[in-house]
Image 1 (spheres, rainbow, N blue to C red):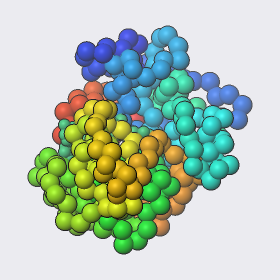
Image 2 (cartoon, rainbow, N blue to C red):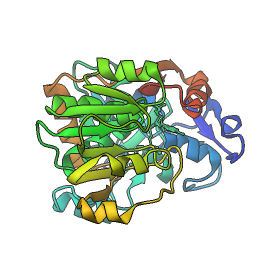
Image 3 (tube, rainbow, N blue to C red):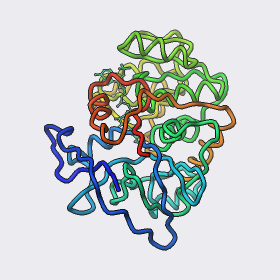
Image 4 (tube, protein in one colour):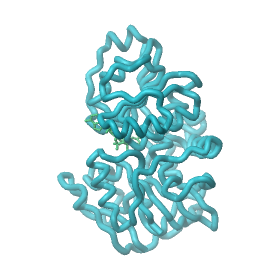
Length: 325
Ligand SMILES: NC(=O)c1ccc[n+]([C@@H]2O[C@H](COP(=O)([O-])OP(=O)(O)OC[C@H]3O[C@@H](n4cnc5c(N)ncnc54)[C@H](OP(=O)(O)O)[C@@H]3O)[C@@H](O)[C@H]2O)c1
């Protein structure tokens, strides 16, 4: 079968580490199912895999990709990308509040940028019928992460103000769509005028240059940019508001004015991926509101390096997808 994989990571030149070629079709253990993949979507995580930062389960070809949609047992499905761990299962018991130490499929040797993959049977969820393959493949990581940040961590309520930093990212575009559908007023920031305009078209009420003063203090801030925006996030949060952090594309360190933190009684949450319960709830929400993930572009599997280059450039608006079959 055709697959996109890495054999030797390259910290300095991650794109050079991408290989596309023939690999053996994976075995399907008891309790798992085979998925014939139709489309996948790229994440920063794949760049880290190419750089050798993420865990490697074994030597030899390491298939890339966490996000996939395809056909399993004749059904159109989307794949839940987090392998069950003790912590994840306890998260389910606690109402989906904890998924610490989540293991993504590729980190356990089950990457999804391949014509055929094997995943635990419980990890396939019916594809929302209004979505095409690339849109469906965009949901597992970015949309699940945004869903958990907004609804589980920040307990977003209709009418609240949400500030989304870095409007063009996969998590950011998902957060805008989800928050608008939930009845929030959404403010975005971006360095790019074009991205600001596209965020307004998605339903944002205001789109500001990065670092600009917001028209209203935010009840909830969705922070994925990190170093470049975190100080602005704390400045823009109302008394009693919540900042939820899931990443740091511009860097992972930030200074924090503690006076602002305690005087405004701001809560800062870390958040990673989401539970299977949240994934099912996300897909129901997407179907109910007929939301369509923003797909920046889709290329064939052979051209996955084009998408990786575009992700590195920071030019994308929405998800970078690959057509697998
Ligand atoms: N914890 C989790 O479970 C989880 C899941 C998914 C993603 N993540 C992380 O979340 C982060 C976002 O990932 P993503 O794929 O959604 O988006 P992304 O492609 O990494 O980019 C997000 C945004 O960052 C902004 N940005 C980058 N450099 C900047 C700079 N120097 N100054 C200001 N803004 C800058 C850009 O905004 P503009 O160009 O619009 O200004 C860009 O649209 C990554 O760090 C990723 O690893 C974590």
